[in-house]
Length: 280
Image 1 (cartoon, rainbow, N blue to C red):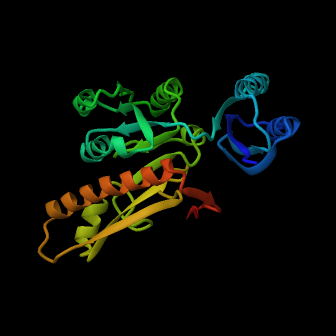
Image 2: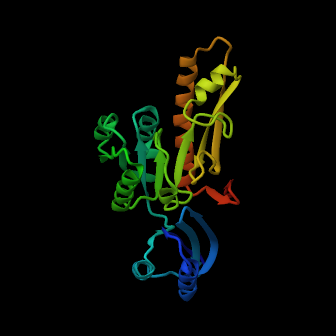
Image 3: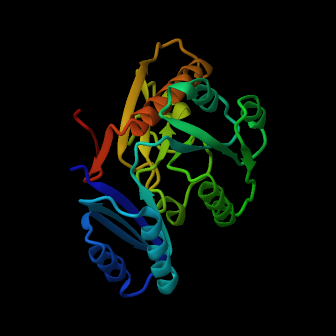
């Protein structure tokens, strides 16, 4: 019999009894806790529970009851139900177009729908309009306020996967913990080497012979999340920095798209901070 799996995220002010409240709720519904991960940073509590059920559950009733518990415990709770239905994707962007262009061009091959594009500015809005995809500008300089608005948009579109297509902002634990292993970022380096925004310049200055890119899940630790997929290209001694950037940006777009496809096709599983490819 196929089991039903529910992911539960709990975020709020840290205090005693939160873990027990939600694990006891899962047990009361005859659920089996398969994964549990909790973190506390500067008084902010985050927990992810993955609960399986041997029989089909009433999703609406389950969600209503856990929201009642969330209200009593003064926590922000969301549930994610694994289904075979089409997944909703949010793409977060700033102003570099190639990753977004590549994702949009391949949207028909994705096992999901690009439901919304969220930009820190309006530069890429014409791409969204041409593709008839909703575009939301969230340009708040205060990242906490920006993230509050992004969360609202993601809830509105019932987002399953967030793709950071050269989104040039650092996401806080308060945001990341709400989408565990459901935010994919692309980094212009074979991590953990050359971290930061100037990876190509560092590689060029060091005379690197091979340059790569890394698609990874996002965690609260910058550029430290589980690695999904990496690729690389050779550098010739006479290549200019502009040539390296051009090659790298194309590879970024292709690698991000591949990682998204693998996730949407349910081929990935994270265990002990490592991404494993599921066997058929």
